Image (cartoon, rainbow, N blue to C red; front, side):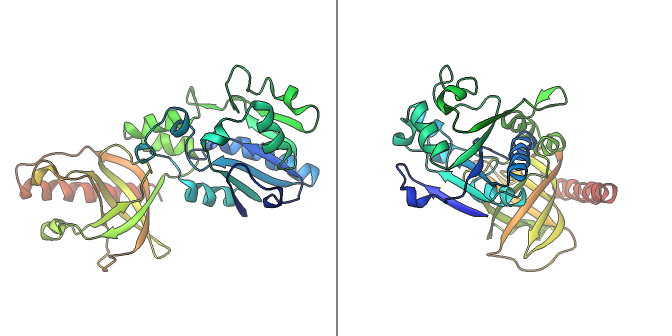
Length: 314
């Protein structure tokens, strides 16, 4: 897959010359609804003998339009994660547009001319609610007028499951409640976050539960605080574990948030390793114990529940 970063205005020489089926969206999470849109594009590309291209943005448009602090944005998938998923879906070209004020100021007609026709789109595919400017004048209903017959348009209908729209918003809500089973069902894969193993306070080792302290990648959404059944990938190998997102409140107030993973049947030194965590199942919220003894007893239960989970869910 060829990843092409574009800063507006672009040079024509920056754009591959292939005619393409162009799929449009922000694709936060690249969930099952997004996958349906991409699949429609892939089918059209195969039928017409064209390359499959997808366009996304380097950050959320609200950073420009609503002046949201970029550091406060939390994504289901950052650009690197999108790249990995798009490649697995068979995308040929991934356009990552830098969403700047100049780009945001494009009229709907200029956006169509420069970022659909200009990218050699012979077919444009998007979800029913895709917009490319003010919704009242730049939605899928108005796109044929701007297209002027220069490309075919495929609109993909809303995707529902469990009586809800498959959407990034609903996935975020599920994660905020610790409902990883349904969040993962809507995503179509097990949610992942990544980070580097760093030194913590080493208290877990004294409790008999040594943990890997993970400095998570910035701007990636973490599930609800609490204890989870997880898998962790270290040097291309997956291990079972249990993770806590929280503040270690048993040992004092005003502590920083941490992500710590106790890896089952594992004793290697992995400081400095870049790891990936898959979030499978919420076990319990973070609890303040009166002392170490109560915490150890609970951790033993958590470990047994984790082993039971993987025994039942191979």
